[in-house]
Length: 187
Image (cartoon, rainbow, N blue to C red; front, side):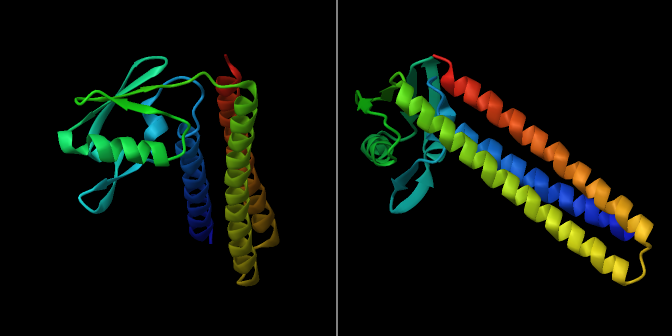
């Protein structure tokens, strides 16, 4: 029975880690006022009829805190990349000089900072819901084992362990959201 419990703990931990990893990726796409290549992570470019991630058709660098430079691997991709960035609705205005695309990242307004902060909190809540769903699945599996002969004491210990895993991930999510909010609100 303890092997089955260990499997339940491992699976729950993996699912919760997956939720945390997804949250980290989503937060990278929320810009905090500084130019970062990660800001363009969700941009897809029409590459000869196929929607392709921008990172697969160009090199993206930040030259300073306010400027991104995109170097397409093919000159013919300059216009499709500019169009994709414009339609991605990121509030960025790409300028091209025939060789590279330059994006000046504007300062965030106080209102926009608050909106981005709310978005970060919403992503955090989504991650917490996912963690709680993983907890529910684990507790359901423990209760099933209890019906199949797992002692009540062992079941209680297992439930407490699952809750401690959940608490650990909730704290990590809170710290991550707090750090992102601080980053967003820093002028």
